[in-house]
Length: 201
Image 1 (tube, rainbow, N blue to C red):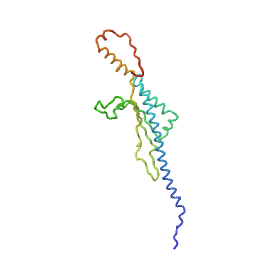
Image 2: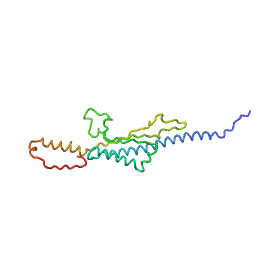
Image 3: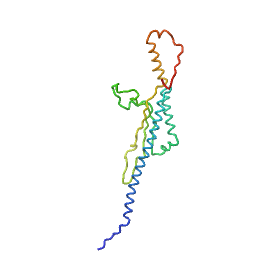
């Protein structure tokens, strides 16, 4: 007895279509991951450059913060970087500049806190990769929650003292300490004193 539908031509076409969907889906996932890692590196550099401007001594801490904010704005507006954030693939938040020590546990033992090495001063930037919210046939969705691919990129370089801090907390204290060494240092009166600042104290 002769069987019907013995012709199997075209079965490879179905296999090719199915495997092509899987391959292109995998390529899409791989592409978005690679692109996201590259963009996150750019955002990390932006936070570093901003923190570097914040680190340098200035007239006041507000001036240091303004320098960091200016650098951040310059980089975001750069023609090579701006297109990355003009679409809906990636979003970055405003820079959080300043003292972030409160975000990290501090030891109660003063012997374990080593000055600047235990100080988190710098810039933090929230980075969201919406491109990773994928819906691919046969693979499914990567997340059911909105903005789930969010990370905070930070650069902590500490902070040099400002001119105001040097005047109030260093030069004045040193002058008073010298006068307290002996009563002979209190006999004369200072007519003019010139303080020379060198990028801080």
